[in-house]
Length: 233
Image (cartoon, rainbow, N blue to C red; front, side):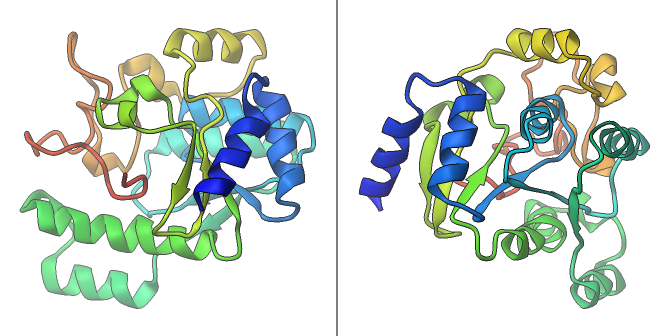
């Protein structure tokens, strides 16, 4: 699959975000998807897709543990753009089994338990969302964490068997904010309260001065790489 990745790399090289999204959508007609968690980066990409009527399916993972503020920006996005955002939920049986056996907060007890919760609430629904897709677009940026600096704007996702494209990979956070404010794109109000990375409510806190971008995610895991497995490298 290296040849396909190289082809897409050449296709988007030197192009703007909008140009690259159009080109990728044309290269994989009807098979390009974008996953949003309604963070500021994802809102930026959603704006590009919806404002330009790009043929890219937008979906989100409804884990059942999101912040009220996340639901707020989700609803505002629907109101402003009048476009569909598909929601994928955890498997009911698997979720019931986990809660019945380990309770609602087992993820605090061990890394293994936390990853099990992430697998049920996020990874398995993601696999369903990506079914039939040839290209998965994300809002990943390189400066979000040390782990993500080792990635590339265009990759082959071997686990999901598709091309993965990060159109704002080289953008800085300042550039994202500047664009969002200039175009009045709705964003999660938690970003104004020192939440740079927002996931499930029980697993996310505000970051303190001097902490890195993802310090607020699974903060009780001191040695964790702060990833849930959605973007495994």
